[in-house]
Length: 521
Image (cartoon, rainbow, N blue to C red; front, side, top):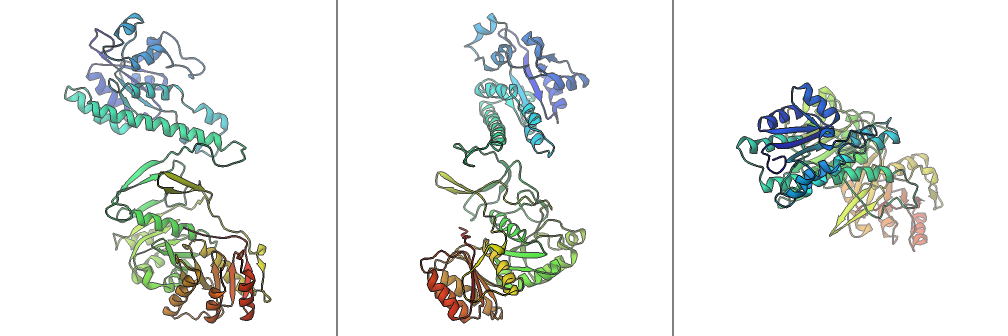
């Protein structure tokens, strides 16, 4: 009912996104709802031939301040917050009608600030005030009011009225929870927008407010007994796995997404054609090439066994020839590239289960924060964006690396940033020869990397070695030198640096210190 003693119900509709509104409102009208609306929404409904009551007619007060104030009135909020059988006297005394259904979606703040040309003044004007206030009022009183923020819920609401029923208590509670999530996410966007424009000593706010939207319910998590879902940040950039378009293949799994993110971040660290193959969150083969096919063949040759069922990433357009080479060589779970040509897409259709992702060419490195969950807590840090120029490195041995060795060291140092600690990478001529990842001792990682190189028939003589952190003892350098390594890049900073440098000098190995560690846990 609209107010005590009246049978007609009332729905207030005030939306920014008007998709599907007219047919929804038309059917509400057939179920004896009086339609109340504001501004552009009222105009749309009238143009569709519907009878509409302006909010100003029930408040007795016009919209003012260019629409900034229109629904902030007791006639609106009393109609939303009134409790059946409790507040009847107040409704009668002040001639306030009940509002039974509230349909609101908010000013498009997210879409507004995503425009490159958006000014701060424009952003501020797209902060909704009346909408969130109404949503919170209706959601608080969900025992009586159905509050709708999602176009996909229009049909679900109507199903009750078609059966001659009121929406159930459980359904109204679900709608209320969704409304509070909607306003919370909206406020989080505004808070983060304003905070980004503050000049503060710390980039980390006292209260971290995050807004992510669920975009996929995954089959399971890391293991089949774990449930999982994918949530995307509203501003997830092109050039990322989160912003990628899936062109074909089965739905992405939790592990697919983790590996694809690692592979794409790694390959985008290179400016020339490159290919990265990742298996179980670690690169197993990385190479530069004159073409994508050349880069892929070299990366694949780095560890064909581990590449089986891996994730393959490119930093440039993926052409048909490369796609054909992948299909001829191996089974892949995921292939991702900024652009997938029509010829490549056609080739992959022969293997319908391969997930093919087009990430987009505009990559925003270091977007947001790197976040890791703990039991009941969240760790937040800036992204490890690398070192910059090797010109800042310091040669600490008697022999300085040659120009070619510096190129190999720079490549290996870029790669090691994406390998789980303890990490060792052997490389030469823009390709990895052996990778040792995730071991409890650094010398064991060095040993595993050498074993991998040997299994693929690679001669490490004259190759470069990168270590993501300092060598605590000389044994890692000794082992590498025995296999022919001639140049080493590492952060330095060990208590035994002099011992490690001495080991390099004894064996004629050039060593440089970067002064920066690259742990990856």
